[in-house]
Image 1 (cartoon, rainbow, N blue to C red):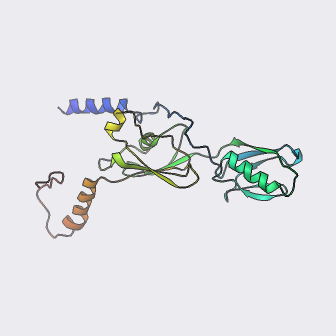
Image 2 (image 1 turned 180 degrees about the vertical axis):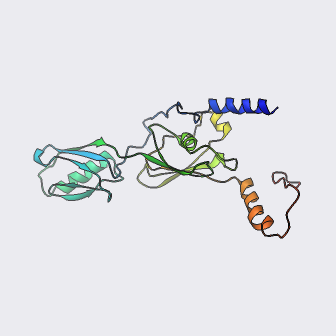
Length: 226
């Protein structure tokens, strides 16, 4: 019976997009948020009306890039289009009708934070095109106490902190994970603790550990009759 159970578990795992290194990548679409610059990115600023001012600048730890005439300008958390508008406004007092373009050149390290009820919480280098389930797989998978139907993804993909609730349960996996979306750089994937696990933790910390005697029987907390 145990061997049959192990075989079934392996079949489910190998069918999961989070199993192994050959997981199917996430598909990007027109609704995917535009990339926003982070410290460590390199940006090419081409000024057509004054080519001698064109530069390749790196976004510094303070989130700014340094350019001639205008000094430091914030670039972090801006899209290429937003940064272009900011530079046009900054150069307007210095140049007549400034025309320029902003082009990403290189990108800094891509990382995602995975925490909560996973085997190895921490910071992980993020390959392209992964979703929350694949990030959890990089962190060693779910713990038995994980509330897989209510995984939280904290992202700044829209310029402000956005919190999305993602269903990563087995049922959702069979439906193709309709809530899944590509993770952005520095997203936080947090797997909360299941209500049963919370009750068990309470029993352990505040009941069993506080009493001078040890319980010799088992509480089935999932059954209303116990």
